[in-house]
Image 1: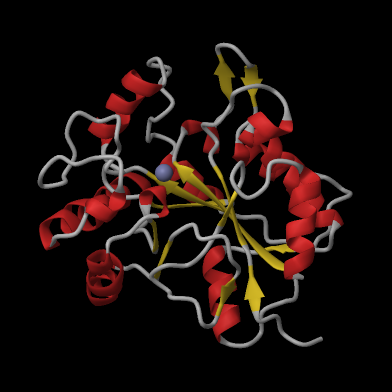
Image 2: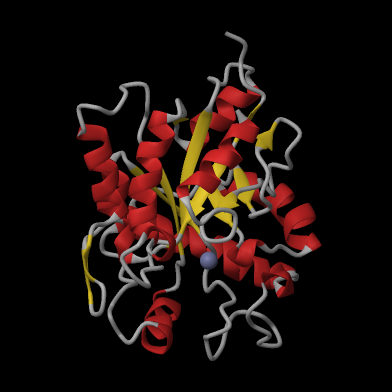
Length: 276
Ligand SMILES: [Zn+2]
């Protein structure tokens, strides 16, 4: 069989639990989508491996990569939600998928988790946006890496998040990652994040996901191509809804996002059919 020329990266946000139906519960959608991918003949592979296989011209047909953004605890630990009740983590769903005797053995079940590094930013976001539910601890990062099912990667230092009082952006302009555009800001958002994640998780990040899928020209075209490799980074991910090909910019790989690019299983099935 001829090698594939492209693969899609799919993204969820485990923090997005608004109800207990597919469309408003990312962990539930994730569990459902795993089974759909299996049934439709797609093969789950880790991000690093899919990129190497694509570059070497030996990518298996219908390969798909799974990612999750923002690094909420629901990536790895079950969570008792105050209004929606007990929620299984993405890690548990992945384990159940792997251990289900009806699941094909062709997969390498794996999820790339992009976490916000700064402990101060996470605790402030927890207070301002998540009712102090403690959804953003980092004690689980090391166990997640050790599990072999998840990789902890970088989603920047403070996301230049609009809900924070102060970010590393020089004029404190928040809510858009394109405003991270000086050497000092890039060091604070990228280098500092990698250093902290390495200390806390036991492994240095190899991938960076741009907050809001946005990057300044300086960060994407200059800073990361120049500094990324020495920082241990192999690639960076945006969220333009396209498949990854050999022609993709390694410092702006595209991704599809749940709730934006699909919000029901039939839509995901149609989207994948166009890519197969
Ligand atoms: Zn994000």
